[in-house]
Length: 433
Image 1 (cartoon, helix red, strand yellow):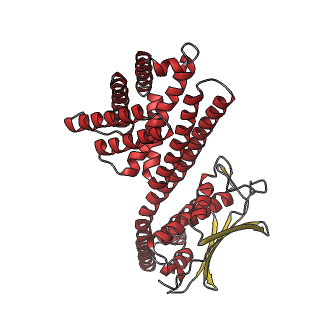
Image 2 (image 1 turned 45 degrees about the horizontal axis):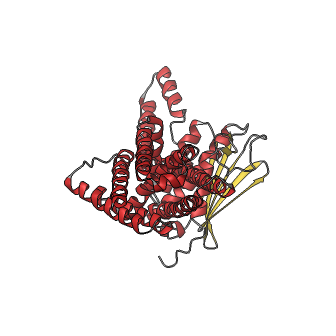
C-alpha cells in the first residue's frame, strides 16, 4: 500500500510540474482549478496503479498515453496537439532524468533507488525540481517555445507521428537500461541512439522552420501584389493622360523655353515598361500576374534590360489551375525570377528574358539571364547557395522544397550561349476541371 502511495505522490509531482512546463512553453492562460486538480489526481492514480501492477515497456507507453489524455483535457486542445505537448515534455524530462541517473549511479546503485521508497521519492523530486528550474532560464524556454510553435503551426499530424516514434524508441531504450542498470556497452549504445534521435529531431525542425518562414513571407507578398497589379494599371492610365495634357500645352504654347521644357518631360521615360505590361496582361488576374508585375518593377530598379513574351490560350492550362496551385506556382516563379534579376544585375549585359507559352498541353516558364562567369551554378539548390553567391540561396532551397512537394511542376536549368536558362513546366492534367 505504501508503495502505491509513493508512486501516486511521484506521479502527482511529475504531472503537476508537466502542467506548469506545458503552460509556459505554449503560452496558455489555463489556471489551477477544481477541474484541473481533478485531471491531475485521476492521472496520478492511474499511473500509480499501472506502475504497481507491472513496470515494463508497456507501462511506460501507457504512462505517455495517460499524460497525453490528461493534458488534452486540461488545455482543451486537439489530440494531435496534446501528443506534441506531451512528447516535448517527455523528451525534456528524459534528458534531466538521464543526467541525474548518470550522476547518482556512481554513488547509489539503481536497484537501491528502485527498492528504497524514500530514496526513490527524493530522486523523483530532485529530477522534477531540476527540470522545472531549467525552464525558467530564458535561453532554454525560448528554444522550447519555438520548437513547439514550429511543430504545431503546420503538418501537425505528421509531427505527431514523428513525436510518437521518438517516444516509443526512447521508452524502449529507457526500459532496457532499467533492466540492465549498469554502465556497459549496451548503455552507451542506447545513450547514443537517444542523442542521435534528438539531433535528427532538431535538424528536422530547423529545416521545417526555414521552409515555413519562407512560405509565410511569400504568402504575405502574394497577398499584396494584387493591389500592386491594380496600381500599375491605374498608374499607366494616369501617366498616359499626363503626357496627353503636356502635348496639348506644347501645341498651344508660343514660348520656346516652355516648349523645350515640355518636350523634355514628354521624352522622359515615365512609363512602367508598356511592352511588359501589355504582355503580362494576357495572364489571368491573381497571384502569378501580380508577382510578375512586382518583379518587373524590381528589374527596372536594377536597370535590367527586360524582355517578356507571353503566348497562352484564353482557356488554357493556367486558367484551369485552382487558387492553391496558382499560389504555389507564383511562389516558385517569383523565386526564380528574383534570382535571375539579381544575377543579371551583377553581369555586364544585365539582360533578363521571360517567356511564357503553352506547347503540347504544357505551360512553360522560361527565364534566361546573363551572369558573372564565377557565379556558383552547381549545387544551387543547397541551402545558402545560388548563382548570386554563398549565403544568399535560401530562396532556391525553398523552391526545391516546393518542387519536391508538387510533382506536377518540373524544373530544369542549363547554360545556353552564356545565358543561365531556368525552365519551369506545368504538366498537371486539367482536363477534368
